Image 1 (cartoon, rainbow, N blue to C red):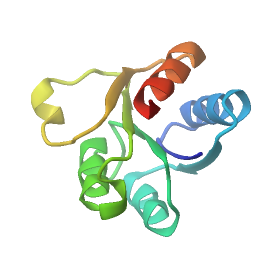
Image 2: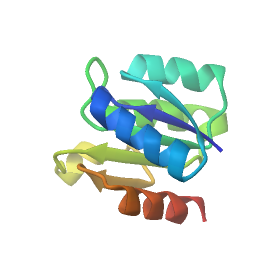
Image 3: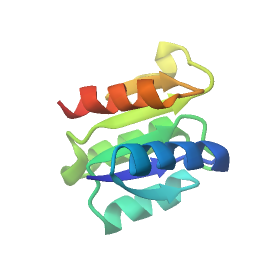
Length: 118
């Protein structure tokens, strides 16, 4: 399975990559901002997205909205991750699959991925 991580925090990207690649045997690609993540999504097909909510240059909600507007990603699971759970109004219209609060540990992340893929 191919997973795209879109997060501006290199430490979080390393942790998520390790969990997804080493523990779950998924192929992982990384983007450190929304526009680069969207470019990768247009170039390569992904089965799952892990998107940070508070990205520079483009908010994670906007990334999610754009992904959902692409035919090939209308039903692809999108897990939003954030250090600060926002008010529900901030998330309106984002059509994310699941929201996780950082720090995200391996067990809860693996459970979340299993639940959105089932």
